[in-house]
Image (tube, rainbow, N blue to C red; front, side):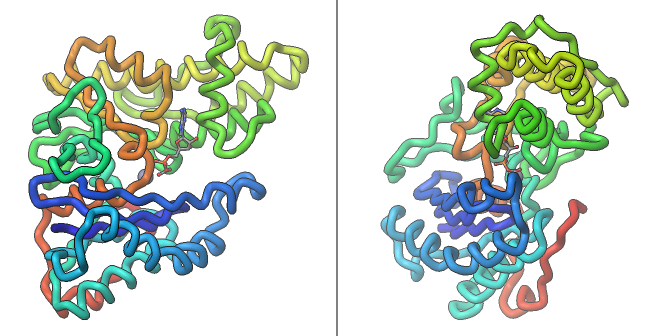
Length: 335
Ligand code: KG4
Ligand code: ZN
């Protein structure tokens, strides 16, 4: 049994996953409300809240899985990338839990977690089965993965679940950031992605044309889009908000889907997984189903940040034995 801990941003998460990839529990304590009044995540507040919550979240994950700490064989934790103070809380907590029991520890790359989220499946012991979109069984390599979240947007080729190759990525804003900034300009709350998604349902996606920038075959660029929305609102202050939301969302989704299609063809891959918070977007979820390959769309709680994907990725990595991991440091940036 693997205990996973994830504290890279503003969710305090712990999960229990078996060696076979069955999710036994997946607890997510969201700090959304804490940061909402500031319109974004305040790093220092996030670290302090992680510190307050992490022990209770781990205890909750154990209880929901119906296992004791003595049944945990490995501790997995996010090492980076993310907010350094936030990461350190999870890492220190994981080291403490592992060291007192002389358990091995696995340091996991947060993005590797997103890339392998669809390799997890429901277990017979799962209290709430983790549905994997239209696909009921875990995905198997080789596959293409589109990760789109508030902090990252990239396409990855997965040959072996132990690693991934980035084929293209955003050169400026992440797709989730584009959603959040667009939502803010439209006067919606934070995080804006889900609200913009909702507003767009009542709008005409063809009402306005927004730029589709093409920085490279498989790279993304979203910062020009938010500026275009800003100017549009300045020039047409009475423009229909739902039409703007629908057209803006269409531009983001089309950029994601077009690069995904190109990558599938260029790489000769026949399976697709999507992940990250933006994978919760209704238009994106519908659009990827039209790509003509089987698609794994994880349930929302495996798309947004969670510890099940961290424990899941740890299955494919080499554990570090006690006491070697005590010197391990968190890292803010992707490697
Ligand atoms: O993966 P995630 O929970 O955290 C990061 O690692 O960043 O992603 C959060 C991002 C936010 O930008 C949020 O607005 C976006 O995912 N998001 C959505 C939707 N739900 C969440 N964007 C568009 N449509 C949604 N339904
Ligand atoms: Zn993430």
